[in-house]
Length: 354
Image (tube, rainbow, N blue to C red; front, side, top):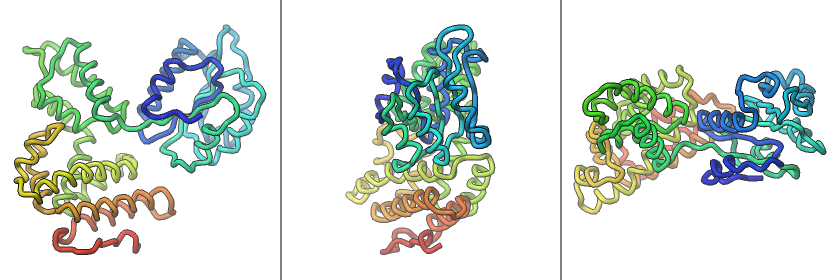
C-alpha cells in the first residue's frame, strides 16, 4: 500500500490491526523516528520492554537474515503484540523483506526505517505493491503550515506567545528535520522560563536558534546566491563534516531559488527588490532581507531558472552515480558563485561535464 504524505498521520492514528509491516522512508529521518516511536508506544506500551520490542539494524540482518523471521514470529511472553523495529534498511534488503511479506502470517508488527528512497526503489516498491497488509509511509520535511502548527502548539502548551517576526524567524530556520525542530523548540521554551512578558521576541528566537546548523544552512544559501565563493565553500565543508546529507543541501538551495523566481519576475516588471521583499508572504526575516535584495539584483528570472536546472542535475547525480557527493556539491557551489548570471545567455553546465 502506498500512503500519501498528507495522509500519513491520519493513517497511522487509525492503523488497522491487520497491518503487518510499515516502511518509513523520506529525507526527514527525525519525523520517521517520531512516527515509529508513536506506533511502538501505541502497540507495545513501554518503549523499553525487551519482551515486546526487538530492535535490529540492516547490518545485523545482512549477517544473520534468519533472525528477522525468528523475531517476527515470536510471541510476547507478557501478552499483546510484539514490535520488530529495523533501522537503516536499504534497497539491498528488498529481497529479504519480499520474502518476509510473502509469509502466510506475521505475528509481530514490523516497522522498517529507511532513508530517502526514490520512486523506483526496490525496497519501496516491495512495500507499496505487497499483497499482504503492508504500507510505505513517506516522511517529508514539514511544510510551513505544519511547522507553524508545531511552533504554536509547543509555545501555547508552555504558556508562551510569540511576535509575528519571531514566528517568521522560526519558520525560516526550522523544519528540515522534525526531531531537530522539537529539540530547538524545547530549548526555546526552557530559555523563556520566567521571562516577562511571556512572549517570544525576535531576539529571543535568534538567541536560541541562532547558533544551530539551520542557520549555517541559511548562511550557505545566501553565500552561494550572493556570489561569496570562499565563504560558501567554508560553510559547505563544515556542514558536510557535521554529517548533513548532501541531497538536503541541494534541496534547500532549490527551495530558495524557487521562491525567488516569482519575486524576480516582479522586479522585472518594475517593482523594486526592496518592495517585493517587504510584501512577501510568508514574511522574510529581517536579517535575511539584505542578502535577498542583493540576490534579486544579481540574478534575473532566467538565470534563476538555469540555476534551478543545475540544482536538479546535481540532485540526480547525488542519487544515481558513483561520483563523490562532496565533489558534486563543491562543483555546484563553484558554478553558482562564479561568473555574472545576468550576463550569461546559456547555462554553464559544468557539473554535467564533470
